[in-house]
Length: 406
Image: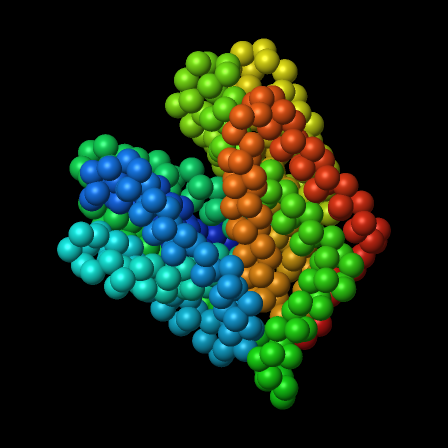
């Protein structure tokens, strides 16, 4: 009987993983693709690089910035609603409609498009950090669940821009916006196969107090504070990489366009590392995987400072991507283990929002250092990763999970 039952258990686990990825990947992929589609669409519509670039930047900002502001409210809503999946599906539909409206640039009044993109930005925390906070409802094995969640993000980071570039090359940016909207809609359909259990109900449902509880957990609960600070700071370096890669490629390959290959090497490495981490059992504690991984990423990034040619640069940056994926998965697991059920979605959405803001800040800072040597920029990124690893030294040794507490 046991032998006959074992394959069924394995099959159910595989089905649950596929179901989660079927819903999460399209939504996150569409979100990543939009950051490429919107600027290209603006340039195509205006016919001018400068004006189109300015308009495209404004459209991207309209679609991304609201997520940081909305994150605490979205998390609080998911922590108290009896129907979390319904809210996530609604958010997915809003995202699809916002991307579809962008395809009407030049036909639909611009204020309407901006309003819908802002609505899409408000909706994004539902299927980013919000969905991550419920992943163990779909996939029972915690380590595997957050490894798969990391794979979902990595597929999106690689596939989103690639999908956008492919459709633009074969058709145009307007069609790419429509395709991206359809992909988001597929994610909404994928939600139908998932079941997310509501959080335990409490008598005190005051929104402000709930948000304050989450903020206190993020700042005063030492294990969670260390994970949040380390994870946020690391994104300062990761967000800076695409900008620094352009300068690095310009110096070493005499072509700024080669910078895309450096970023691609990192993204492909992260995807490979995420898949490997999901498939290969790891016995190390998650805080060791996270902190140790960040340190290795920092060392590899510092290794890229040595000008040994573009192939060497691609290899070490690709290796750093392989290492960063298990670290990110461990970070997600620690968020879950060190947050009480009552504030868990808020912990995830706020944490995701902080990382998004840090990545944008990292890109902006390096952008302002455009005249600096590329090696110096890469060295600074490596130092940021090392500092992120150092923060994890503050993680209390032997800290026990608190996630079973309501």
